[in-house]
Amino acid sequence: MPRPSPEDITPTLIHDITVTGLSMTPATPVSSASAGDQPPGYKVPSVEAWIANHVEGLTPPLTWTRLTGGHSNLTFLIEDARGNRAVIRRPPLGELLPKAHDMGREWALIKALGPTAVPVPRALGFCEDTSVTGAAFYLMSVIDGQPLYTAQDTLRLAPLDKREQIAHSFVDVLADLHSIEPDAVGLSDLGKKDDYIGRQLKAWYRSWNASIEPASLDDPRAHSLEQFLRANVPEQGPARIVHGDYGLHNCLIGPQGTVAAVVDWEISTLGDPLADLAYALNWFPDPSDTEPWVGADSPTTVPGFPGRHALARRYGERTGRDLSKLDYYVAFNRWKTAAIVHGVYARYMEGKKSSEGIDLDTMRSRILLALTQSEQAVERLLSA
Image (cartoon, rainbow, N blue to C red):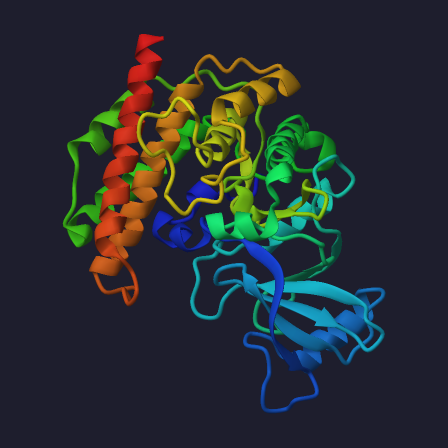
């Protein structure tokens, strides 16, 4: 029986988990011995008792340090008196849909991929007994690496002479992920194997339509593009593991300028690997661009990165896949981006999320730009 796929989750809640990233940069330490300052979401005595019984190499009491990134998931660095460390992660507090912030999915992925060529943190322990601390949680190893969220992060963390290597490692890791047979690593039940694009189109078109009224925004291109994409879905080859949010923000870049680990697997499923590739390439501008391709503060806007066309060729050479219809997947991903941001925008406009510090005009512009880029990809596809 396949696990429920991420597209079976109500899309309005997925919005909170599609832009995540996990930094190993510590924030403020919280000692377990400090009775008045406990880490939110964790009953420290019961969690540490569980760790003592189930995780080798960690001896409570532990010092808890909140990690930046990880979005709303509650992620801490924990360390014992001997200096042994791990990362612990659980869903946010509050009412959640059953399969949102799926720690079991993340755990299954890093455990299964541990012995493969895809770099992931080492899986240390998973607790699905919610009586321990109110939610499932898991522990993984600490990785010496940092994600790249912004151009400033790249300038600070990625020397110019390492950026090409980072990009090559980035696309090589994705190619290696897409070369894994899910059944061979015990992930045959990660999701439905067929009609990945069709299911995504259905879920995100439903999201767009549901968000029209609260967003006070509709665009006829959202509907015409959905019709084109639905009518022209390429034949899907064998299903592969798709990360779903593969970008430099979800890769920990190590000191050597390579991907030390891929993180945030909670919306991963089985599907069409070329959709995953197009999403990843959308982070990279190209010398052939006649207008901005990514946001001005994207980590790839600084000099030193190869363009997305060169990275696509590298992926094709490594995997042997036919990329002649890659622009279809670019169009799909840009359309999907418009639907995702549209849903987030609707929640701000409706007052369900605080818009303090949020530039709603820029967010609205992003929706329209994504639709324009989807249209342009369709035009390239039809003229090829």
